[in-house]
Amino acid sequence: MARSTDPAERVYITATHPAGGLLIGLVFGGLIILTAAFEYPNIGAVIYDLVFFVFTIAFAYRFARARGVASPEGLHVINLMTVFDLSWDEIDRFEIGRWKILPAVCLIRLQNGETSHIYGIEENYFFPGESGRKLVEELNAELSEYRSAGAAPEQAITGAQDELFRAPRPGA
Image (cartoon, rainbow, N blue to C red):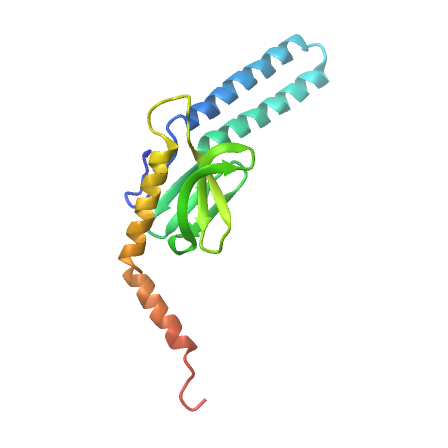
């Protein structure tokens, strides 16, 4: 797990994932700049290369930023193109599996039968160390902790207030 500023939040991300984003940005960004240098007299090609360079760096940044952040309220997921929140009550379990073209990422099985994913947690077969499976086990342990703890006191109070406001009034 990586650092977080809030002690109640835990960040889940595979250790090599940010390095992959940096590598993509450096390799493709360097190739684009090198191409622009050879096309210097043609200003349209240079502008095209620079725009493509900016998009490559933006993609590399999003790639490196992908992760899951667990808090007492639930899970905040940052993927390449989407950001979403799930409460612990919505989640059934976490597992490693295939998501579209991604061979081994963290799948989030939801209570309603749907599946989502956390792109920042992936099983990495090339680099030993902190694997995606270990992070998935930690997420499942955290999920079971929240299930066994039940509703937090403020959630119980809010639920009682909601029940109070839904109850029919006497004489109505």
